[in-house]
Image (cartoon, rainbow over all chains, first blue to last red; front, side, top):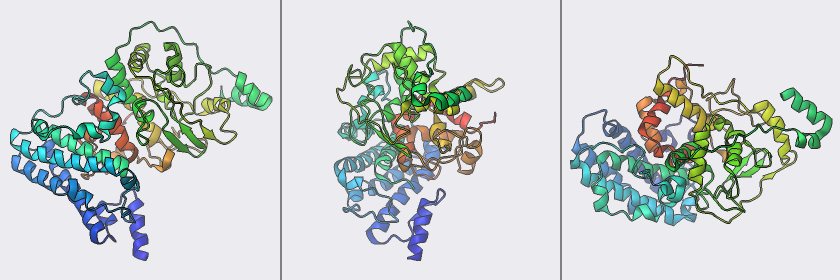
Length: 191
Length: 293
């Protein structure tokens, strides 16, 4: 119990690292948290390249996309059996009360990751245009009419893999991260 | 002004407060607004993020988002063009007063959960732009839940005292000697994007501790969220720089490879990711060098 208390304290501490927070997790929960950690580590490692601070390497992009693919979609969903969110998990109950939206986000991440892998040879690209395509002078969009899609609704899920794979690597990377963030916003408790 | 307000409260109580005028005159605004510029400003200012009940799947800007404060729950207003439940029967001057002064068309103060304090310097053109953008929002004929605050907080006139004590001018004035990009960042951070609303500690009355707690974080945000310190020193020690911070405002990615969740995730999802790269860099430039302290 003492260990559990320590783990909880570490979880809520502002500077607690994810690695520390994962102590005490076992079985499927540990696997799940390690999957998240693997994606985070990989993202940290590749972000400077995606921001153009390091030379572009298509192989690194492919490897990164494979890591995201391995931990998203059905593989991710299988690790979220109903109610498995006791400490040190930071998963919210909303995952199961709003499973459909959670699933859409998990699958969306897989789709973006797959597209990223396909687009790797295209090069980094120009980076996301100012404000992203969602701006584009479309005020309906700007005024929030696409809220559903922004928060992981069906609209973005309908984008075909082919369409996505034609986007630049930097755009796909940014959009993958936005999917992660949308999911964390809705379904992860704040530490 | 604060002394006058307090004297009035003592002498006339609530009735006195009700009569105590706080509205500043609103000049007629005849400018033509730019819908795109207004929508951009609405995104940056968090209008859409706060006034859309994302959790409940509500339509854009129809309000209903509940903010659980220590004083009770306040619900974001319906800002659609519905004349009964939204702002469809307002004039642009009503809108200007609401945004810049935090007062209803009848001069009733809004609760400071609405971050109007940061919008006080919005120009007439910015108001006209916002107004034009809000005219494009489809009406939603749905009321939002009534605020649920205990007495005396339920008395909105009491907010006049609060305003006298805690309503501060935004720190948006350009600083000479600083670069244009830094000053643009200052204008956004201290104004429209109102970072300090969440990232500054509040006193027992819910007023921001602008002298001692500026940007030093807040552990008790509405709904139980927390906002970390974002002074320049705190940001540096957490591994941020201008590049990573501006990128985070687009993607949510933090220096550790994690992505934002919670309130900050919402800020990025609903707001800053729609901003231009230049503006995000400006914000980061200012945040990493808040050197006018």
